[in-house]
Length: 140
Length: 99
Image (cartoon, rainbow over all chains, first blue to last red; front, side):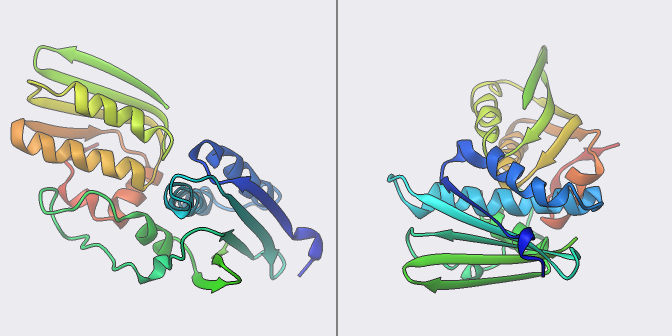
């Protein structure tokens, strides 16, 4: 792993910052000829994780998210880590939605983390030193 | 995201351009909340829609639930990226998607 590929962004957890987070991720991908499909899947993943933190981690208070990214295995994999000091929350414990249900039977919401899980190759959650740490790995 | 609305009698066509993300989903939600009274035929044109994630799906589901009570809802010109998300979440099973 090339340490030059490590980058970090510390940013306030607000929806308005979503485009800055997308730009941060794009910096890793622009050097690499990854397919539009992979790019779109990562955009979905980043949006879901970041907006979840922005909407819920700090309640009505302000707080930061630290995002660390790095390319691994000769840029074959992209590892992205989201850290916040908000309410402890393990999104991986959320049950999957019933994706066979019709519109009238469906609850509104609950699809975000499902989309994350289905668009990454690996995902893990830890709670350490008062921080939520969600790490995803995507083959790019 | 840009939202264009065309109202013809009881028919409303909504064309979306750009990204239906967590930031712009609120704008579409306002249209769904405010402009569907008396509408019995709702169509979406997704030809220029590049991106959708769960915040956008939430609004589409609210629209579909509403239109199930009062008429029909169809979605035209869904691109491949958007279709992937609709299929992955099973939304393609209940949305009326037209080529």
